[in-house]
Amino acid sequence: MKKIISLVTILTIGVFVFVGCGKSSTTDGSLTKVKDAGTITIGIDDTYPPMEFKDSANKIKGFDIDMANDIGKKMGVKVKYVPTSWDGIFLALKAKKFDLIQSSVSITDKRKETMIFTTPYIYGGNAIFVKTSNNDINGEKDLNGKTLGIEMGTTAQDVLAKITGIKEVKKYNAMTEAFMDLKTGRIDAVVSDPQVGDYYISDKKSDFKQVKSMLNQEPIGAAFRKSDVALRDEYQKAMDELKKDGTLSKISIKWFGNDIYKK
Image (cartoon, rainbow, N blue to C red; front, side, top):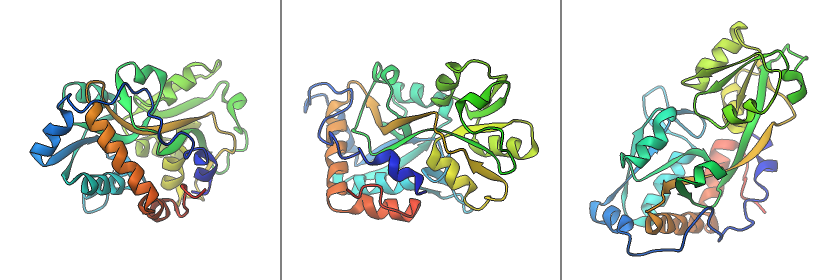
């Protein structure tokens, strides 16, 4: 997980500048609704370790989960998770199936057209993972003629669409399925967030490795409906307090083995 450090050193820049935000509002009703209910509902894709996933006891856990639970405490509300397939999670937010998404959502210009975000709390992106024995793929230029695996609906799809010469991009419902096909040789590489791929292969170093060269880097934040400015602002306030009091650093060390928030 040491690779994450280089991706998030600029996290502290612009902490108080909201991404894709409008003017703060206390009258849109979104915060009042959550406070009155006493519960904030959060959409997640629970197949994305170490960020959000189910353990062997079917309990939801991960970096995002610990962080959201502590934000809920700061806000004085309970937290309820709504597991949702990634390819439908943004439509579910729009349909008000939950109040927000905190599930490793990359902040992109396209997504900012329909949603508002907190400031980035981590930086991810798209890394290439191959079998340990593969020395032919060392970066983007080596993807020509290759078959790649990605999770359906992730930004990897857009990134790879801009690269010419790729033979095929196979889309999976979960990264675990993609890595299984990589192991059996059905695909040549998997493209995934580095922290997710690193966590998955942490006990499988004999089978997989991450290619040193990243395809891109992406800021990650919590996503809200455009109308819910008041709720986003309160969530951001709690997030900032957790960073300031060292809680996020403790969560980072727990899941990544190092403090990604250390200046």
